[in-house]
Image 1 (cartoon, rainbow, N blue to C red):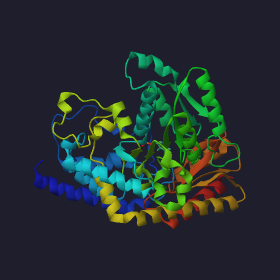
Image 2: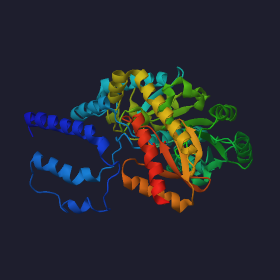
Image 3: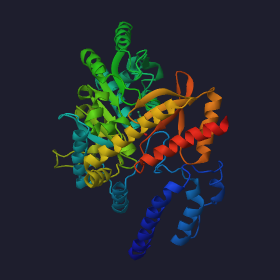
Image 4: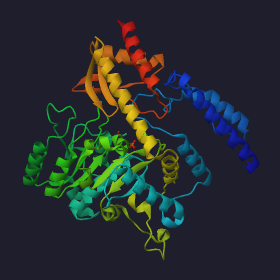
Length: 467
Ligand SMILES: *Cc1c(COP(=O)(O)O)cnc(C)c1O
């Protein structure tokens, strides 16, 4: 392909994208496809001869698009958002075209230095104090894994040797039952093991379901007495199921007095901290050792972009850095090589979309979006609560709440399926105290107040039909 053709197709692809977004509101959020239907349309063997872009793009429209779940749909209320704001898309288009590798400073100096500045902009935006440094990880799962590796290394005395390997079975990490499954995976992958990830009960009666710190202290005490090595605590700000929030200030106190490393997972809720009024949810976060939030969820810097803040980058580097000769960049002792802060060596240029996003909207427009989502979600919860057969199971934490319709789990699952088959909105489910509950979160970049109306009428309308 020559560059004139590239320019021509580039314009057509951009036009296709704009058209898609203009009409997105009219599409069902979730596709109506049977498992295997896309696979069945793809030739079993790779092509020997090339073909034209015209036919590739036709097939894309015909085969791929009907099987896409529309995450940018204004009425995507499932899971958490994976917002891609238009300026962020433009940045990603540029990144795709320049295609740099950003593992070391010298493999793309501008990418490294932009990353340093963007992480610091984000630090200020969410109100973390000076002294936090950071890196853009591919995902919160990776940030949590690296934090857990640091916990392990610190408590074992920085030895990735045989002695360390046998001792790691004594390492213990503490969290509540509300943390994301990425915490379990981090425990498996780090070699600490599921058995050493200790679930501390949550405070009964507190709707935010914070970890019971008295139980945490007692567990640490008895673990030490039994010869275990308490290493760290993973706190949640905005758990995935229902938005649970630990009392970070209490966890920080325990971590401080016990010499444990505190990692806070605010993958979703962290974005809301650009609004000062929501920061009470993670009070004490300034005392954490490690904090992660995903600009690729609510904020609009498209996947993937996870901001990982740490107070002591040396601890991260001591855990992960490895310097064979071919990666040594002689003569630049003062530069940052971010691949020493992350597990993969190769790194995408993720800072550019943050730069575009933050400059285009400014924090104030992003704050307004977050505040709107929270307002609309709370209003919807109030309205559903006022309906005779609906019950709010967990009250809104930011823009996330859960509800049930009168009836058993099977009835609620059926209602959920009917709502999603209708196509106007998309919701998912969770379990709260063993019972099925339907989740609602408002967070789509393109959402308006009218979309919340549509959610109300769809939910109540489908429930009426089912009676
Ligand atoms: C989404 C989410 C994660 C996982 O994020 P990835 O970036 O997909 O790894 C972890 N924790 C919480 C609380 C989340 O909401």
